[in-house]
Image (cartoon, rainbow, N blue to C red):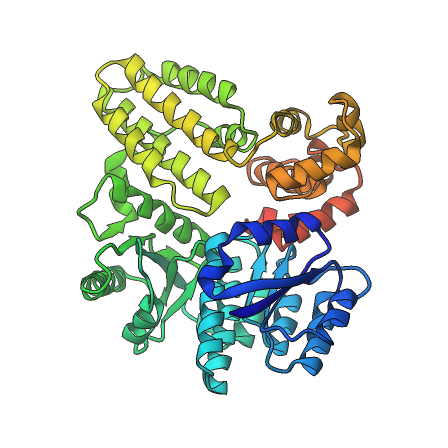
Length: 504
């Protein structure tokens, strides 16, 4: 049984790690924990352990200093970093110290489980330094490419990191494909890498959802686009012998590397359509036009839906669905209205999985059947309302206290106003410290983290869709100090609001 030591200054993180996994199934046991690096180091001086799981930002001694000192005491200790900061310098320094993975909070359970399996395998069989180094380099590559494709890094910063990693991205055009396999995926990444190693214009990595991502960087023309699709078809055929459930989503070939995030989002969306096209193993984003995905037929304001999901407001979401469909029922054919409904189901699925990072297909397969079986307008509305309600219920399963749900809805309505645990505690007749602990336990985030993330998401919407100045947007979402807004925006998005307005 491998011994695990956890270090984090947030008690709920430690409690959660004890409860979130069946550690014995990994042949592991948590032998102790500490709330800061110095306390952990004192314990490690007399207690041998195999795996150290540590936060970076802690009082007295931070996680990076702890790793350095722990290695002097126990040179073979394996280290997994937990962090609320997606910072390249932290990651790079962690890599230099030798880590198994750099996991962002809130923790993705599947990624943690995968990391623990890999770590156990390394403890079972001592790997050569070359293999160890290659694994570390892949972690760094995964992080950089994921941040690039999710718009969390400015172009200049990405170029610096790509140069550091010797990533070949010299051609002007880009397309992204994503591979996903249900069930057993052991060895698939290495298999894909091996099959594509003779194609240097293809970069392969893992994203935060555990999907395999292929970035094609070429001088695009019709032949190149077709060659990329042919390559994906061959890849699918070869993989399906070992991984029968594998499916590939393909985004469009686009001009300019700055459009890579758009192609990535298209590929993610294409994957969701396996529910509609179960016989297709490679789903090209272009096929979505056959399911009402054109901007002319899909005119529902999805941002408002996403806000209602995030705030867990089931009642308002139900009302919004009926109002939107009633507004559009006279301007489209029944078939077009059904296509709009199918699109909404897919977007519900994407939104929920984006929040939870888990596969929630069962809810939405049933929803698709209800939409397709609807024979009247009311049945179609009720089908979508049921999907919306179940989407929010899936989030509410993680919330045991109704007060936290009320707080989330209060934030949704009043995020631009002054918000604090003291004010909300007085409103709900709870001590602010207790309310803060309750909120953290129920949502997995501190109150301040949640507020800042929520406000930054609203700011991103205004930066994309308005001509307001940055300081005006800052005030609109609740930041009265522009400097503090810049600091929080860079922390959660990775670039400044000015850069985001230009490149986002």
